[in-house]
Amino acid sequence: MSARNRELVGLIPASLLVTAGFAGVFIQRSNVLSNVSLTYGAIFLGLCVAGHILIRMTLPRADPYMFPLVALLASFGLVMVYRIDSTLARQQAQWFVLGLILFAATIILFRDYRRLERYRYTIVLVSLGLMVLPRFPGIGYSANGAYLGIRIPGLFVFQPAEFAKIGLVIFLASYLSDTRQVLVVGARRFLGVTIPPIKHFGPVVMIWGVAMLILILLHDVGSSLMFYGGLLAVLYVATSRISFVVVGMVAFALGAWYLGTHISHIHARVEDWLHPFDPRLYASPLGSYQIANGIFAQAAGGLFGQGFGQSTLVFPGAKCCLIPNPGTDMIYAIITDELGLFGAAAVLITYLMFVARGFKTAVMARDSFSTLLASGLSAMFALQVFVIVGGVTRVIPLTGVTLPFISYGGSSLVANFVLLALLLLTSDRARRPAQ
Image (tube, rainbow, N blue to C red; front, top):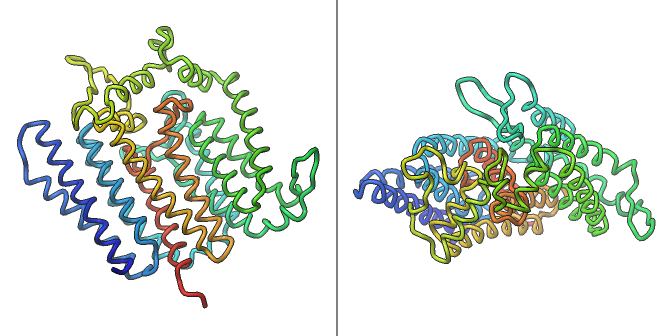
């Protein structure tokens, strides 16, 4: 079976999941099996087949598993969000369609994606400008002490950091592909630590420092961790020097200690992480109510879960949410509660398979820019999953990032479709016969 036919067959489980998932929601809510679930499944399959046809026509040698894996995650996300809030699910479906449109536009406009190298400074300046927008009065949107997005009056809330991460990875891949040899050859050893030449490494430090400063001003800890980890991943792939990563981790630890002890919003998150069951913190503003109840929900799920639709989201007879933000920050806790450890593990395995295909694309690429671009995008995607899952499971302090393709969030969904398009473009070029 050809690669494109394998991709087409891989879309069938995603459409069946949509059909079965919506049927389960209808039965759970009204004990009625509706034909609407078949309609939803057919529409979802039709949209995915349209994306497949575009890939077949423009990227015939692209990886055949990335798009089906994304379709599987997106279908599962639509079902879970609909089970939590049908209004949010309808909005998520609209964002899904917009994401597919931008996915197609990215493939058509950037068939030769290496042209992006020429505009790396323009791309990074635009990315930094997008990141600072949430601090502008009148349009900035804040939640739980963090400035997360900009509000378009009467339309929607847009989170520019989701697109800025792609721009910053493109800049890193382009700049380091030109300077990677100089960073290694011109480096000096001091007390056993490799120090790269400041002349060539300075622009990376300066731009990334500005990005980190902006995120600190926004109090967006999750994006800060994700961006910083992406920098270290691309730097290691470019230079193969573990000492750069070690120095970066030490600097991160010092910065995290300072922020955790001097900024009240971040300090509160750390306290909630360390003492989630403290009664004083549990009932206080910015307290541990959310993470503690998320832990209780995951424990209630056990190995096999309580059953689809059986997680308690609202106190009986009250409007207060038992688990705040169940469709965004805490959706992984809902998944574990209803589907158990095995269901949550299946979701994580799907993410791992997608990341593995991304890194395989990086290994197969024949030029340094393609290798660094695929590595950076894959690492950023993996870190986003780690940050939110680690926060919900109390591995790290909880931060407000979305679970890619599953959590409700239009900006994240659309940006990750652009990320997918860039990975497929890189994969198609890497798999072409050698000239």
